[in-house]
Image (cartoon, rainbow, N blue to C red; front, side, top):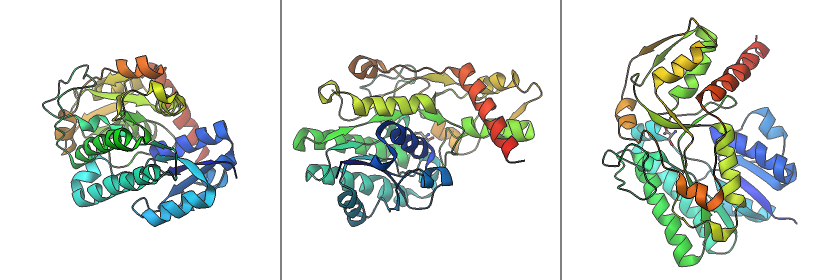
Length: 319
Ligand code: SER
């Protein structure tokens, strides 16, 4: 049986699009999608799907053995805002799932692991502009703590046991297919939906809160590229800084008014403001560029064009 790829957390914002891209690249039969719940029809109908709890070691192991999986993308996680509401659950899910997958690699059952980290590994003592790869990291959210600790474990498993684990620190990801859930950067997705449906949006961050962001196409390219790179080129085994664009709520609102001139934005910051304030405004991704050729394609304007175009079609279909 040919070796397969398993995506854990395939129904999520990134997992759903990653699954489709990997199925295009490697063939529908080669990519096993899994999640704790059922996904949309497009994903469930385009290849094999398994219900899998990311905290269940035996369940993951059985699935890996059943399909001869050699590469695992572990996309299941509780994000920053939800993590603050359920700290123990965030720790349990984010850490145990990583241990399970790293241990399968350590035992030689799988060959390769992708695990996403985040800009949430940084904290208020980190330089906020053009944040370097190696810098002070004192995250203040449970999510950020799990990602920072996870990075240390990834590097440890690579150095001690030779595990081929690869990771990137995603910024906020903007996409139109699957809604994000429970993140601080989610406003930058919600805003497009509300702009098209209601012509207005009440933002939960203040208007000048600048954060690093990226369009989904670029995020998927980065994920595929780092996994396809030769192992010797992956010199950082904790997690790579990754960057595309940075903007504030008022800048994204302005980019939307080019398409929807009457669009109105109001600002009512909530507890997520403190999380956003603790994160970088922009990121230095030069190591990812040097080591595996990272480059982004979408800027704020081209991303907004694409988001509005796709969502208008999506909402029209549903009328
Ligand atoms: N998008 C994530 C969040 O806001 C950051 O990795 O939690």
